[in-house]
Image (cartoon, rainbow, N blue to C red; front, top):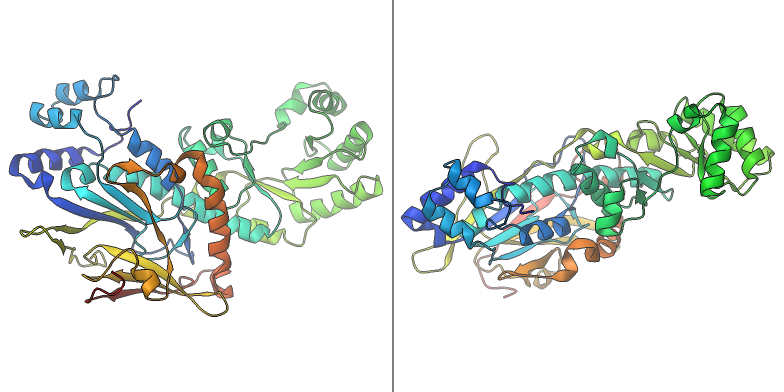
Length: 446
């Protein structure tokens, strides 16, 4: 199925007017960035770029699903525009922050370079993916940070849109989650899938003993038994009786979780099951996970708060034209001068992170001006942040699909480890490091 109609109508009305006056073929550079982080956040996490590249490859209007026919029948476009759309395939270039990297206000997360026509119609799909996936990954990163070395498991599919669910699972995996309950995420991207039983499985049986016996017969002792349907203490006793000390885990989904986890840990140890783990669920977020830090909890299952961005359901990113082709063919910077903090810094940009001698991040440096070149960050002693995704229509296969996920996970962990201690706090505060925009007038780094 084509992804081309995942597009706002105004992109096609702009295209139609640009085709009529000749602006459609004018070279343009668009940039994705966030003017600010959501309230309370000290950093954001780039996620979704690998998924986005797959969608851009499928972004075509001549699909057999009747896309063009509908656009003509609904009078959304004229026959001339429909003819142009029939041959559309993005032939420009895309660069951006590597997936898993951290970002800050003003970071040029993605840069799209091509003709105005081929770039402008990608706005909605780009922002839809990045605003969702970056929001989920940023929340997930705070949760894995609070969990320290204990695994976090994504199980929020029943709390979000059916197509958002696998995307959320992927974004959480980039930010360090160990697995997901969403099978489609496992099929698409090879993310480990997890899941055992809900309270309904216990309630459909005549007794808890019958339910546990059936689950163990089906799944073996390497399963997790849900022990809070009735009496937790009795359920834990029964679980060990039926499974023995080899039972992998028990799950708690209600009650005073810190106190309950301590009581269950003591009981399991007394029953001779010291290796049986305790996993907890029940509307967890990063603050609830942090509150459980001193409790004997081995893993966390997180749903609603994760897939909704834990209070920040969008990364607030925008897609803005920052440069256009001038009369002589060179690029010239353009930008908004709108009041209310909605202005933009014109010109194509390259970014790097200044790292001190101890390996800690100090500044996010955004380089702009005629001297900017892909090698500029290294020339100025910065750690480069941007990588090529598409080069004149040719996609890098290592930066899309499931192939890019292991590197993205490792990159996220390494990038987060560079933050100063204040940048890792869950409390509200300023971004972990400041963003500095530096205008380069010469060709240094070229």
